[in-house]
Image (cartoon, rainbow, N blue to C red; front, side, top):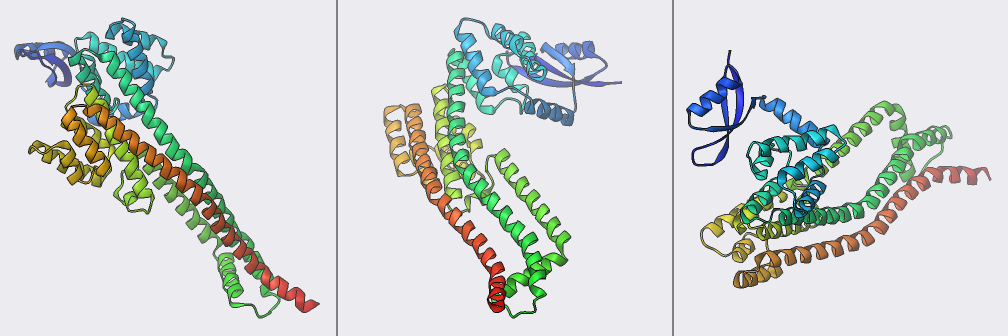
Length: 402
């Protein structure tokens, strides 16, 4: 009976690769690989793709903080430790079993002769492609610790910018949520009770109050259906918000929203320029850096970036290609043109990112200052209108009694 095995091998040309074989046991798999001219570095039974994905997903949920991991690894390498010694030190300090297992996987791969980038690449979905590309480039230039530190600082700056944007949206979201809850409570609970009370008086009501009372009678008769519908709507909204937060707001419909789409797109452009600058500074060619950073863009901008990369391959300059593709505004285009003349592409890309980030922060602050009072006014008017329409019949009844 044959068992599938996965082998990490070194070819005659010196390249390290993964090989899949079916053999009776591990010794047979090693023998067959050696017969084909490969040097076997590691051999393990192959798990199914679904099982491997499930394991990766489970560990990712409980996994390492990649930013902290990169910074600590950079610090240990700067202190003079080898990659293997640094990884063993990080594994010894981990108190969570799942995180310690992730580091032990790297230790095992590196001890079998793989470079750190190759070890990271053996675990797809666990480590970001940007980290793998950064490590791979730094292994060729010999500045692994500096590259890891730059990657950690880059992630911290992106996280700080994301936190500012999300933090500015929390208060309006809470205000809107509380306002909607109050409105639903008035319409679904209070208005039906008033409708029953006012209906018993048999008095003529204004058309607006009649409309409100009609809704109250309808809500009283279909309370369960309305409750279930509200619950389904709440679940749908929660699912949509959760998907947006998980996927990084990459859906195309988000860009069509007024103001929100422009803000999200500006945020992604800032990520694109800062990430590309970090990769270029680490020794990665600009087209490849743009391709790697393209995963941060939305669907429409990703297509524009693909068109820009095609222009660059045809010999057009980066500034011209990004401008024609709609990924560089006049300021960014001018700064990129200067970078092409001076060769300081990494520095210019980081300056463009800073320009976008400062513009984004000003836009978010201005929007929050205008949107929050406007939202409070709208919610107050809606709640006030409901209350007034409910109490108008009572005022009319009280005046008739007098």
